[in-house]
Image (cartoon, rainbow, N blue to C red; front, side):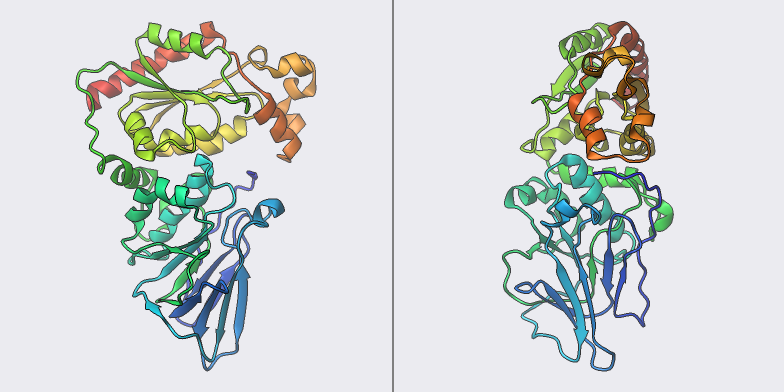
Length: 401
């Protein structure tokens, strides 16, 4: 699902002379911009632009940032962007631009919800649409997903959301951004925005959506709280001695809260827990995306299984540092991986994961290191990091509460 290409392009900038312009040079996404009034006919998934003087244009785009993944993209609705002498009659006028994307694909996985969705939306709103409040036009926007993230969606726009899958009226917009751009995995490059902003500003949006609107006061006089992210359900990367790890953290001095996030976990509940805690620890996986809910200055500990060092760095270490979190990683030894029991110490899978992976993060490799592997932490070794985390978290609590 994740490639290694480090090159992320600047979002397309339109000029007055362009009408429909697309960039398709990026490895993971296509992006198109309609520079001028456009009419959406949702029954045909087509955006029309009236241009009586120029030659007709037509572009097709699937507005989801996984364009090389054939199986994933097969379920994404294709949109048509076209210009010609006449456009259909407008039925609903919006004096605002459209921001068009698909909520299909891996939507529902919290990492992809933010990496493939909300992070790119934030980028577009603060670059191409920097002085405008868009109308969000979505396909594959399931009711439960819109309900779960409704408060966050409303931080980007005051306008009602348009669902391409069940709307029948023609909508008119002042322009349209179709597709979502990216600066990298859970990354915001302030140099590519109209007004420089970072992941700290993105955290402010999350606070507005999930924190301030729900009024959960921080407990006074509480102990240092560590949130332990728990993976369950036989999906891989489970912490086999989780109870012992919890007890070790409590012995160091933490109040430990075990958090088992799921697709039904209310976002304001998760935000309230993480934003009022002083540290978080868990094994590399999608749930670590909750680092975005933590206060800058708090402590984020990532347990890194065999073969996941690169992923751990780009998906969570780099964003954590950009968020201003105090980052600690615990890279497991061979003896702490369940892969030893299956393959043996001398197998290349265990002995040299980098050589096993090569330059290709294939489904086979992903299955081995992400699905087959569990961890059992060496408590003597891990205890040193717990003590370091406690000291850092204590200084943070003394300063910030």
